[in-house]
Image (cartoon, rainbow, N blue to C red; front, side, top):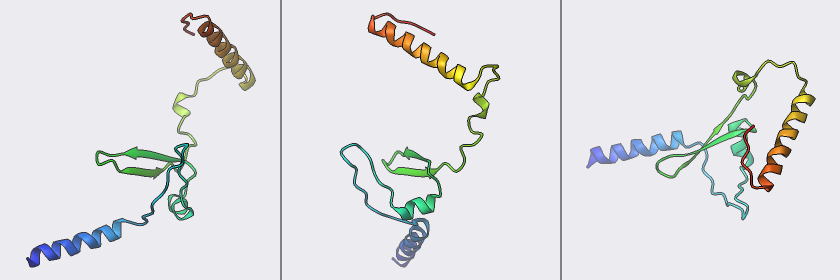
Length: 107
């Protein structure tokens, strides 16, 4: 019995060390939550990642630096940003027009 009690006390101490902050949040009708300031201060980031594990626990992890994370997708092009944006607008309008007509289109 002493072994069980000591193991339980050790588990409680470990959980106390691991758990930095616990709070109950409400989910709005629009599916939004507000992270308390203390949580935002702990995460030190405006961008977070949410994951749900096999025990239906939501894990919130900070994304500390987005700079350079998309660099692998960068393509060299002689076009200006404005030209790329105009082409994207033209393509999206063409796709929308074909969808309204019921036609399938690929870019």
